[in-house]
Length: 391
Ligand code: FE
Image (cartoon, rainbow, N blue to C red; front, side, top):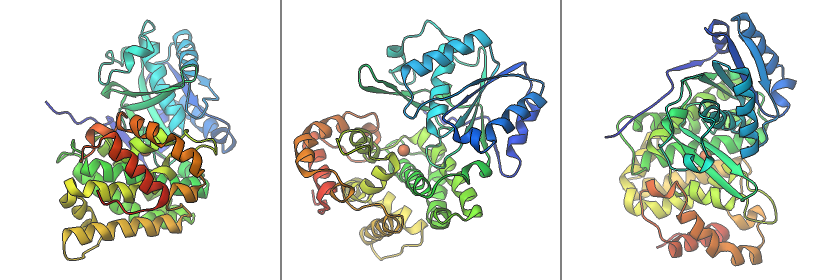
């Protein structure tokens, strides 16, 4: 049996936030990250809309990037005291991801984190509250996905939680919020969205339900990301929708090894974090070259959908990789991990262990071509030195 799940409602465009004034219920808790949503006035606006709906409002602030188990348990505790019937999460991926996990512990306080690691095994939610997500960045699409990532810092482990129960009830895409993204974040999150859509389209789990969403998202990213990067408002709005379409696709079709590699390299090196979208953007052309053996026709579909007609399917795929390279160059994203600044000695020392972890990542299973640790190590070497993927 296959399943395709989306939020019940998506509100978008000018005045999308006004839907908050019409909610029925008694209490809402707003879960938010650092100060930017407050500084730009969006937190106040959202609280005032919820009060207009006659709701009593509590705020849980300061969810950190890569939210921790402790933050989740603290938020759930506040929810148990306050007893909201709406959870309203606002911000980049992190506050929304944290709020999804808080929701589980609010409704099922006796749950253990370890129980949630098994995908699609969550208890039935919506016994106490429904969930609204309002994204402030245009990339993760957590507002429409069944995923959340929580970090246990004491064990140094990231828990990727996956269950359709945590797909939000309502997603609100308010373009004025996405307009506040800085330029580099716009590029990185945009390339993350492109990666989501491409990986979903070639995924082993692709379906007639996810294909059109993925293709439309890819077309929109190629059309609007450059202007969005330069700050064009209309393009920013279109990117906010494109990343959401990509999210609907990958929430149901899953991802592939670009994400496996980004997850396991992101915090692996002493020279600092590699931003998620930036890592994806660097790896994507190499992974396409690796995957083309098993998914040439699917990649050619993508190339043709964005106007690349180069005779054979193989040439079209090469054209697609060149197009991605050109976008990366325009956005100042380096071509290799070496150019990103990862030290060669450290890379050599760690690559075998990273390769093994990447093969074991939750995203590897849906990749169109099987990969073992040796091949992953070779692929990571290509990504480091910028050499051709010819195996
Ligand atoms: Fe991603």
